[in-house]
Image (cartoon, rainbow, N blue to C red; front, side, top):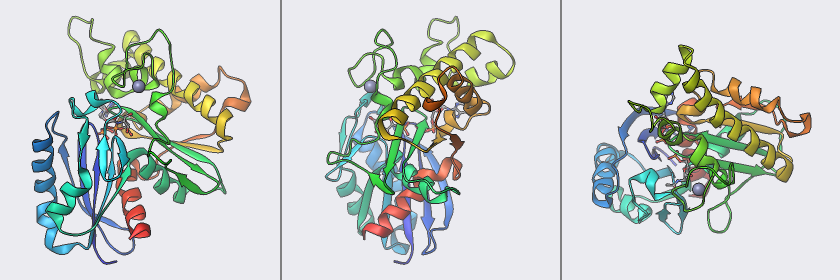
Length: 290
Ligand code: ADP
Ligand code: BMX
Ligand code: ZN
């Protein structure tokens, strides 16, 4: 394998980078994810891929959504402005004219982060707190993708049976309480509703209501990590995504863990690759698959 192009398609942004045979990323770019329209998504992908077309042998993709049989199927279509189903592999192969390998974004990030752990770990989980809440699980040193590509969709485990309705159709999912979208939505009744970025800025300035919204998110993540730790005997949990990596967030999750008995508190650390876990995982997965 020579040069590759890797993409990380999230609900808010699409990142692209070139990857060389050593797995090093370069020429990183980022663009807003178009909302709700398959044609606009295709045009955005064309825009990102076109400059690299003549120079790469493969495209590796980490994408939000259930990734199966070459399709992206949204579990929570609201995260993509209502877009529910998209022929991602055929679209990209049509543009790039080279083989394309797809993986869910949380799964890709888990696989990349797993390789960087400094201690010997067999079972780990990656969690992205971003537009949604996603994840990936490594069990016995292997990425667990599941036969339907569903494995690791920990954002759709239950946080609160009386919580907000989740875009997947179930009430009270972790994603409906903890995601960046949920953090913004929790301000809907304010005189001037704000985004998650602003909620974090306000919390930093000691605004109590903003801190409470972030603490509710962090508590839901701590409880979900506890449940997954009991289910899978997790030895490490890595946190990423723009909310997960935001200043102070990990400390709030650790504080929420302290309310639980010690056995439920898996060690937590921030993503080594920061915003590039998905891109790095897409590169690793594509080179191992092709
Ligand atoms: P994607 O879901 O496309 O991978 P991100 O990881 O950037 O993208 O997550 C987007 C979510 O994170 C949005 O809800 C946005 O408001 C929130 N967000 C972005 N930057 C920050 C930040 N610096 N602090 C807190 N929240 C952020
Ligand atoms: C949602 C779901 C997951 C994804 C997770 C994080 C959709 C479109 N996505 O739970 O597949 O892994 O969000 O995705 O249903 P992100 O967009 O926040 O990066
Ligand atoms: Zn859900």
